[in-house]
Amino acid sequence: MFNVGWISSSLAIWRQGEDAERQITFPVPSYLIETATERILIDTGLNPAAIGDPAAFYGRPEAGAFGLEVERGIAEQLDVSTLTQIVLTHLHFDHAGGLTHLPSSIPIIVQRREWEAGHDAARAKKNFLYPRDYAAHDREVVLVDGDHDLLGDGSVELLLTPGHTPGHQSVRVGDRLILGADVTHFASTLEDHRFPIFADDFAAQARSADRLRGLRDGGARVMPGHDPEVLRPGPVVI
Image (tube, rainbow, N blue to C red; front, top):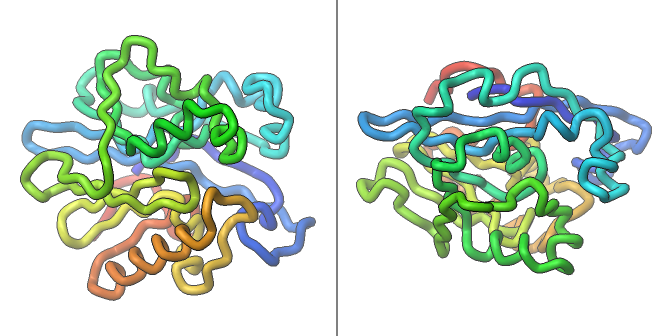
């Protein structure tokens, strides 16, 4: 895991029922999966160009509700020229924002329903998706539908876990690790379903959380999206 940014705002945005005056600063993670032949980046973090004035950068006033920080972007923490694939769990600015700083020769893998929502003006606005982050230009975009065996050998599987956004996906690594992304921002949300105040579909998000909770109860470690009590840069121990 790499820490590729920080977001500060009211905790009530991210966890229903919290005091709106209570502030939180949480990490923005990115993950590198290495195999004998592949170096797969999971999410890209914030766009450093958006840090000073995100509302102006994206042309969306709600983006100004967040304080953003980046100490070192993903391109400063690893040799991105050796990456073979980039998996985007979804298209929110803290997951897709760093894409423009990565070589255009690296294909991205995203759920078809997420990509289509991101290119539909009404759905993108509803889900706070900012096309400036994921404009593909000449980059190869691989669209998948539902659960997907990424390498064809069962070692890395994309799990369709919608609700937070239309085509949100999580990543299963081996049998014991799930990168849950924003199905739940916090580990405790697998139990209490206190999701952020916004979602594409709260009922679908609850079903996705229940799916990940079942995998956790079956012995897998589920990494939450942004929990400052859980996420630490470095090797992820299974």
